[in-house]
Length: 610
Image (cartoon, rainbow, N blue to C red; front, side):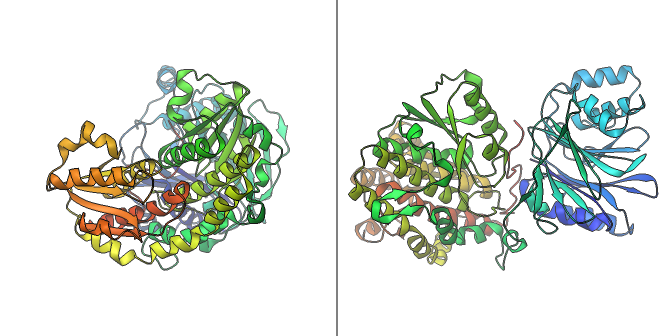
């Protein structure tokens, strides 16, 4: 969840570290720090708050160093403050370490180190790790071996980077369960937890795998296992540009990413729809199509917004492919001894491809023999590499913590998977063409909704002071209700709940009064009349109603206080359209409350710890 960046080369590392940390801010953090080797000494500069606060703090020192590491911390052990911020250091302040992850046995290690005479100044598990490495350095091991020996005693997850005054020509890094990537340059190398921190300097990268350690020099790198076996690593070329991870004139990344959805949806489906045959072509699944279509059961594992996309996919696959589907929270999946077999397919959905719970669930599913399919956005991410097969959503970098374009791209890819396996089974070419045509029409229809941005902003103005929201939908729109509520909670800090509309009478109706905004997702589908009945019930109790309805529905305007209209499409694809107004509504309410839309409190973009 935190951010790691490091540099070694011929340039001043400090501005590179600060720039890298800024590009990792979206991951969520509460403090930041840098550590450098300069004039044969190790120096640490840390600050609670934003990277800009750290930048201001160090500007007066005129720092210049050819090797350094930087970190943004998201508090796990210990409150957010300067002492608990990274880098952490040994008693002599010659060894500096930054760390993502959680050391689960840190209390035992801490006691052992105290018995050896070590004292601790912070509340973090990372300080235990740095002192453990120091313990082995004092046994006359070099830095790489000291790191290896220390990590052999560690239980938990880590992505670490270490620099040492006595070996100023290298950075030592290692990973287990927390991403790390090496950026390969000319007479310089970088490390980061995310390629976004590297893209301004190089597009050549090496992904570290679990239980690997690397020595990074300015002109080379050496990768080994924790057992000291040398490895040959493949250098990969990453896509993307620096422009993709800047705001491009928008006030916030979130608004930029909402507005990018016509293009991101096009990218998700480009070259993947064969209209004349009513087919989907997914290169990542070649060789596995029959295996997936022949599954006795499909399980979808995900967290947060991706879990909501999985719920929509459950409706899609069961309707068109006649395969039973279960949608699981990845965080619960591996802890309940799930029953899996070789006849099961498990789809893992993750924007980052690094979500710790989802990755752990994937490993459990692989262990039990199920086919594992990854649906991720970040190319080269761990879930993409660990899955047997999979599909990239190609939404492009998503910087805003609240997922928007990744969600709609996930829905696109899941609809294509549905079309692929349904056509393998009993779906006719005519029905396949209908779905394919409807998918291809989505970008234009999404743009039509985005053109109503000012109207949605006016609706948002009315509800800035609300303390609670209720989101209601039925069928395909129930997951949209959950997603709309999540977006509002994430960035506006307004309590919001999503429910199946019919469940309103089983409890939530007690909350409805003249102060309760209720959002109905009410396209004209097979359950529309049922939803209208729920609207009447809320209206009779004085609730303030916002309805998302189809363009051709004029009658609903007389029932509700506010309507936002969307084009029509087939029911399985309506969530792609109905979620757009809810993204805009959450965005504008949060902006009008003066909140940090891109970096909401306590949240991280990529949840890489349990």
